[in-house]
Picture 1 (cartoon, rainbow, N blue to C red):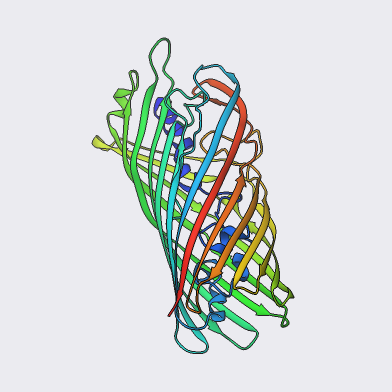
Picture 2 (picture 1 turned 90 degrees about the horizontal axis):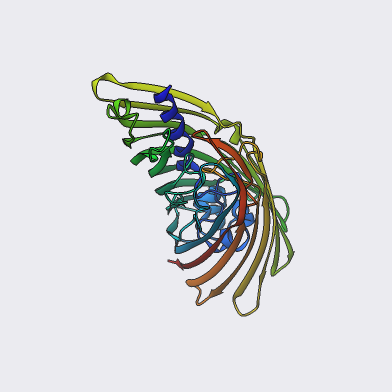
Length: 417
């Protein structure tokens, strides 16, 4: 029972590897480009003008003439403050559990001929984390998790005819996690500590897109992203009084879960020669994410495996955006989007306190010349109330987030060769 308790406590926090910086259905549409940040991600699926389409919908690359490259930098500024109503173990609410993260990005499209395009996108989609502090009221579920990652996504597109284009690609994602969780010990003994040090893995996720020009004014895009298995493994250390006999033999941990499949559909309608209306909808199978396997191994043959289900639901997303180009080579865009919650209030935990989410976005871009332009964008992401009523380590904590949001600030430069 003691070893299983440790496994459950670790497993409760380890899933931050997949979610501490994702949003909505837990996939972030903000990848640092003016279309992603300036339209609340709505313009991603029908993007036919910028090289980040290599990731968001590779079929859109056929709309780009000539070789094009774009570099960007995105800063995430979170405000994540929990306010407890009940905390039987005592402790603090944790202050601002988020911290500033910086995410660089680079995209390029190579024109092979009239019909074929090659593309690549390099981003750090998994940077960030949460840090509630050692004395957090929910410390037996999570104290601190710091996640870093790198995504490399090559893709190819083919123009079938004047109306239809197809694209396919694969994302190679490197994930790295550091995690701290407290262990409740009986009587007057101080809390024990479990730390997972830099567990990591390379994961691969395929994606397929299409773009169809219905009329001169209406374009429809679609993207399918396949399920991807992740197997993080690395070092485990524990410091306790009553469980040292067990934990001293356990020094390696492996966590297996899946990033879910998703389907996204969007449209782009030309209201005027200078004004575009965009909308999108997606479905993400986050019910598959709830099934997780945790394995712990160590010296002398000591090992154990446990599995659990978070009872998550599939999610859906809907958004609408507008872009307008002025005669002096300036572009403004605005967007709003909504994502449903993958988990009910009764199931939400401190390690992954996701909820329904709302995005508000705006961006400004200017063409400096026929070859060079730049853009600035921002998104305000509201992460919901995040209500929780949980028991961990035999202690109950209840409350919700008084503030729970992230501000994205983005800048890019694009050059056409």
